[in-house]
Image (cartoon, rainbow, N blue to C red; front, side, top):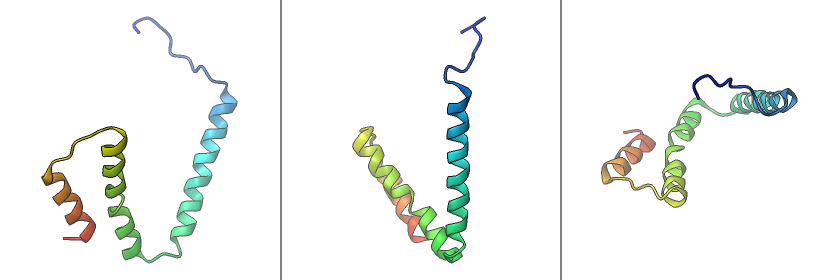
Length: 79
């Protein structure tokens, strides 16, 4: 890659559409969270590790140790 220029391959309008979509998704997310209590938000955020581990195991064939499962369970339960 030395000496090569890194120029975007896609037209700028593609980047604008993706940026706008991401901005709107973030705005909608924060608006929706206004109606959810903070403890529920926190529990939902900590529980995100569970599907990440499931997808990692199923799609990427990632192997997790028992210690990983214990940590995820502890974080999710709040201990």
